[in-house]
Image (cartoon, rainbow, N blue to C red):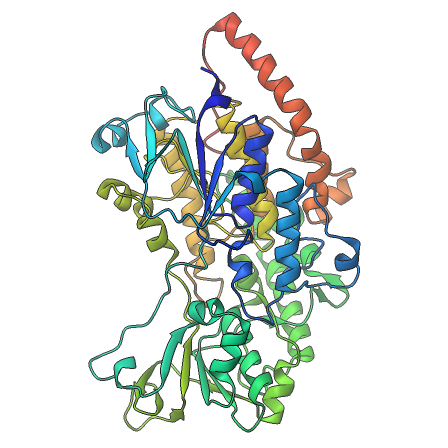
Length: 548
């Protein structure tokens, strides 16, 4: 069976979809990318606030083999959203991805046509034999199209908004103004969004990055005459740079030495004990960062000190970059920060803490920056009721494939602090699976490994010392995770030169560039050598390790 003749579908042309297509092309496939937007690639970066910038420095948010233009990376530490869109579009053009994209094509549902769902769920091996395409009889149906493999790259931060529920006569129905989610506000376009908020009393509910950006944009438009109210339960670690006492956050929290201070899935007893012994070191680093940023940012003065530790925020990908002059606008009265456990609506605004006697916030427009329902977006993708239940009931193996949903991968659902090269590593792994470079282990072993990783990610999602959130994040163990993917693909995980660099410097796209630039040369050689070995000893393909 010539795997490169198999039909591969990719849903979404954001960062994860583009790199998934690029690496599938590099393996000889000709994937089709379905993108709902009709105006270009870039995903959520094409539909965001005018003031939105990267939350990661440009040198870290890049593909391993595609650096930023010098005029951007040399002038902007955190590039603007339009610069990010152009960077992603240039990457797509450079690697021939644009020609694979069908714009204006929204995938409403995907149906697996092969064995019945119940039979697929009972398989001992993923897709029946542990290989990407199974025995070749299964297909995914996308409307009138048929594909042998499906890759979902729909992300978590678009599509299905998370909106609070309210008791009767306490919700938006009693409000005489306009209520919208931050997703809808971002999708309006810059001119329409500006017209909506200008000269209006605006209240923004939330404490995440989208809330901070929306509040800052409203304050810049209206000033002190119509101050923007920010309603939040607690503060969030929003910082004004990537350095603490002159040392980068990456060197403090994102290298191999820092990862020794946290428990990691499948690490063994010795490393687990070492992590316990080194816990005070992680606590100290966290306190140093907290002290530094409290000195730099007047968060204590305005009641915005987070309950969560700084290290917990890093681990859970809840760290953000503060909008320019945010606290200057608080000082001048353009932004009013209101802390509340809960809120409800009244005819002319909001009532804080759901109490008739609670503080009232007058508003003409209320923006709910209350997050997204990424799980529902995945669930809605499937026709099969069995798959709908399975996709949220059990975690993904290697954060990419569901042990009981055949011939399908998910890229970009699990985040990292510098997500773009994590997406790229996922895409490389899936492309190697498609090319037959390795075979997945048994379903039981995959489920055991996935459950162990999920237990770790759930702990990090709920924070170290407080906080919350519902998005899986590899922030504290990204190097450990990438090591697993490298071993599966047959590559040496440790790529730096020198023991000090290996343990003290964070891994970034530049490190993967040297390692991955040889993948396209060596991968075919490796696959060819494995093919020769298979001929001599039978049709077996090496099984990917289920445990690190």
